[in-house]
Length: 349
Ligand SMILES: [Zn+2]
Ligand SMILES: [Zn+2]
Image 1 (cartoon, protein in one colour):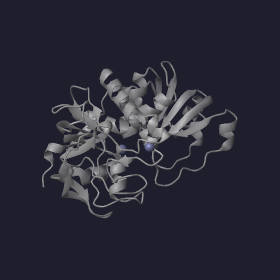
Image 2 (cartoon, helix red, strand yellow; image 1 turned 180 degrees about the vertical axis):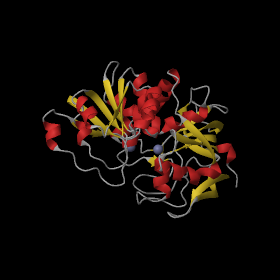
Image 3 (cartoon, rainbow, N blue to C red; image 1 turned 120 degrees about the vertical axis):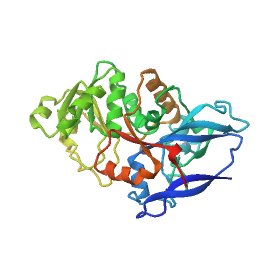
Image 4 (cartoon, helix red, strand yellow; image 1 turned 90 degrees about the horizontal axis):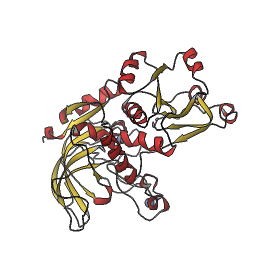
């Protein structure tokens, strides 16, 4: 074991603060990474405050990890010391079930192991990226092909794949009109990626002040979702919608935007349910409401390569580790454009 500096929450009511954890020595199939940057996801905040009622303490969050490989096991053939590497939301899965067999580890029928907070169906705690080092099975380590702006690559490991995967799953193509609901950490990635796929992106927001930024990020059009006239003008016109809003809200006005046979996919995780959508809005146009969770490891690599090729990174604000609690408060006020990333060189005991 190696003693590793980290930042942890000790209970639902405590701040995140300095802590030391033990990391395993790299086994034959393991990659050890010195963490340089870690993105701050809203899930980190939900977890440290036990808002999903499943938190194991001490809780060391962080699942948007970029760093440099510092050791590899004897069987590791895809990484060598000195390579840049990434780790996202998962560090293991059963590797036996049908979903794992299809490379869809995020839907592992026996539950994947989260990079932090352990297996989804319960088990031993795992410690995430708010730490100086992590040891991960080769299979769950991603290659980073971006050559610059590596801090801004970190959020691709969760926010990027969460939006890329449904855009691919529902076959978004050049020339289609794609709606993105919400312009936060997820939404700003959805706009960039869908635009890079050649879609005509329409951003839906409650904040008129976000229009200019949405266009800068690649949206062709911005609709203020509180403007009923503007919403009515867009009815039956979208080929696909990715809804990134995590707060419970009425889904009906958005479902009404879809063409016949088209889908709106939810990727935000509200702490209370959305009001149930109206059935008539679905059956009269054979519309579909879907959901999607991150992406498999193979698809995460595909997303990273796609983003590197198209020059896509997250828009970030870099913070020091000690400022994490302030960053959480700012996330709650939506006061971030669009993702905080921790400079892990600032991690001190
Ligand atoms: Zn996340
Ligand atoms: Zn599995």
